[in-house]
Image (cartoon, rainbow, N blue to C red; front, side, top):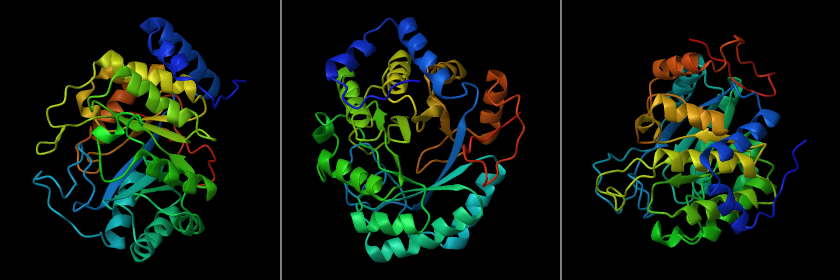
Length: 332
């Protein structure tokens, strides 16, 4: 039984990053095998239910109203459209349906329009997740009453590097929302983005903030920045493949029971890099051709990847609402 730790020192985490690559991956994979089936991957699908016109100035984001990225603004989708997309995602093998809206912080009136979407997806037997920006404790309680399973709110990067990424909110704002979500007994989904000009120490600090929360996030999405023309980060140098895999491995060591998700940027990752990420402890992906505003591998490509790697190959069970693990099983 692996003992969970919530008091990691920064130097301890930096020491993990500095391990020889093979030693780090061996350590991470050994922990991964103790806590998860190493050949199963949880599959989530993501839909942008309200696009653009966000007042925030996140330097990586195509949906910010501060930058000219050519993105068309779209109002909140109708519930029938959302449920149609959720059904398609379920039919393709997704066990969790995530809905994102480009808000800084939703009004109660806006939240009222999302509630029926959550209930509708839940009725399909899927896990529900939303990412709507900063929310208050009362709004978190409202979402819990609606049956929400997960709330995504990434901390993005380290608290030290955060002011270089966004100025319209601060790092503590992110933590306050995570606290509200946790206190409402909603599962926390929170991770970060690599490739925003951060140092290795920043990556260590970001993971320290997540792993030293009172309860480790249930899901930890690790994104590779997709540079968007028109944003301040359009020409930022990406991390190397080994740097990205190291971050996955350290996340697995620090948060043994958390689901670590390969999120944005998988189109830039070859089969070998993704295989190393799964070996290092990643056990979830976003599935489907489109994330919020960026492209993603096709479902057929992911089916082929899973088949080649032997992921979920031996089981052929259908997802059911009674499956408490909700580990989706996909075959080629």
